[in-house]
Structure formats: C-alpha cells, structure tokens
Image (tube, rainbow, N blue to C red; front, side, top):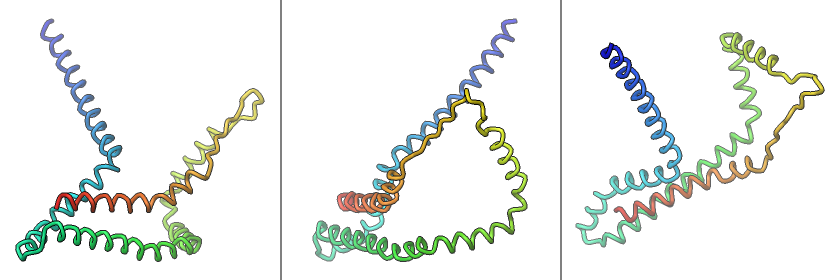
Length: 177
C-alpha cells in the first residue's frame, strides 16, 4: 500500500515539475518580450562593436586615436542607417498611396485559393450567428468604441521609435568600441 502511495506522489510531483517548467518557459518568453525595447538596442550595440572593433584596432595601429576612429565610425554608421531609413520611406509612401490598388490585386489573387477556406468561413459565420445580440429588452448591449487618436499616434511614432533604438545602439556601440 505504501508503494502505491509513493508512486502516486511521484506522478503528482512529475506533473507539477512539468507545469512549473512550462510556466518558467512562458515567463522567460514574456520577460524577453517586455524587455524588447531595452534588449534590441543593447544587442545591436554589441554586434556593431564586435563587428567594427578589428577595424578600429587596425586604424589605431596606423596612428589614429581610438576615440576619433570610433566616433567617426559611429557617425558614419548612424548617418548611413538614418539615410537608408529616409531612402526607403519613399517606396513605402508609394505603397501607402497605392494601397487600394494593391488590395484589389491581392483580393483577386486570394479569391482563387479561397475555396479551401470555405468550411472555415462557414464556421465563423455560425459563431457570429450564435453570438449575435438578442432582441430581448432586458438584455443591454454594450459596445466599446476605441478612439482613433492612439492608432494615429502609434503609426506616427513607430518609425521614430526604431530610429531612436538605432541611434541608442550606435551610441552604446561607441562606448563599447
């Protein structure tokens, strides 16, 4: 009888260990996603510093001061990266201006493969019908409308966020080089 209880306890402890390991993995993934604004520039700074450190050493051996070499290289990287971002903004603006045409072309291409997804669309329609609000006067329908301003601010701030991340990474790389 004692052996059976011990086996049950062992199974229970193994299950707890699996659950705890799963929670730990989920916690680590969540931690990295929350620390993305810090980890991306730091990682990029280390990559930039490791990549360009041999060039700086070579130029220092030729008689140039290390601080001047690192500063010039950081300025070149920063100007190159920001210039690339500016140059790519033109085609992206063109895509946004032609978005209705692009959507129409994409819709016609997707119609040819939509037959495979027909059962999924039927299931979605059935779920919508099942969750439709009732006409019962005792049931109050609540509709939450979000303001459009946060979306506009997000769209405007998105490129600036990445420009700031890149600039911060280059400045950190300057101190690491």
